Image 1 (cartoon, rainbow, N blue to C red):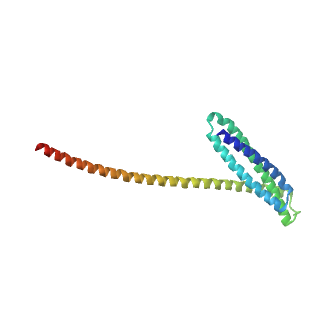
Image 2 (image 1 turned 45 degrees about the horizontal axis):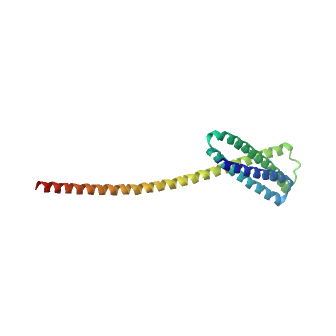
Image 3 (image 1 turned 180 degrees about the horizontal axis):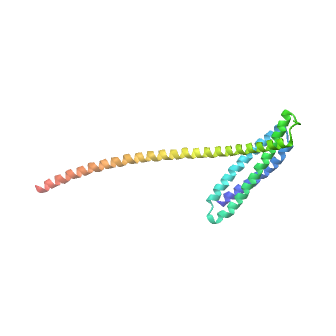
Amino acid sequence: MSSDFESYEQDFGTTTAELTNKIGRIPKLSGEEKTQLILNVDKQLEEVRELMEQMDLEVREIPIQSRAMYNGRLKSYKQELEKLEKDFKRSRIAYSDEVRHELLGDDGGSSEGQLIKLREERAHLLDNTERLERSSRRLEAGYQIAVETEQVGQEILSNLHGDREKIQKARERLRETDANLGKSSRILTGMLRR
């Protein structure tokens, strides 16, 4: 099981190294190339989040005596992922500022304080959007589990219904056998008397 965790660690290391490189390149690019890189980084970050979930599941399966070491490593990977996400947000905010300036022109009247406030608001909105996306994924997973549980419940009810019918048939046969035994007992008793 720890070999699976180590395999996930290698994937995490490779992917995060690629992401760090790509995030660093975002501010240097422009136009369609920059947009494509942002979409690519966003997709890779989602893959890393899924990888972290797999690592978390693996840690839960590791024996308790070894689990503390793996939990520490997992915690540091989560911190690294958070740092990558923050770096990506900053590069996206810089990108959206650049696009706004290209579209609207540089507004000389806007103060530095307003720009900082706008950046903070954008960062806050991005955080909220990511939280909503994560919540949506969790809700979808919960819904899927509920559907699977319902299917299992229906199968169990169907099996119980079949078992009930078998028990009722067996009970009916037992009553018939009991009645036949009673008749044969009376016949034998009558024969013995004669």
